[in-house]
Image (cartoon, rainbow, N blue to C red):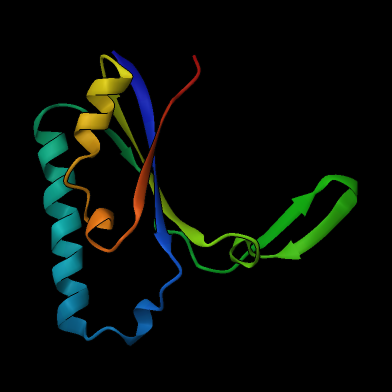
Length: 112
């Protein structure tokens, strides 16, 4: 079985304004979705949720503030799963809660 990384992207949004009950509901969707993948024995590891700010180092030593300055989507988090093929990994990505909020899941094979 091969390993694949899911990269979760979301259009720029301010989650700090959501009521606590809505945040809890979103967290439950994520937990249930990951549990479904783990229940199939396909879960490898969960990445941590990323903070929204940061720095980007570019060639020539140029440093810019966070990646959100130049993109329309934020990279929220990542996860690693096991699957026999890219098609199977893509099927596992269906139902991801980020899709409910207009986001996307990038599915990438891990080299090796």
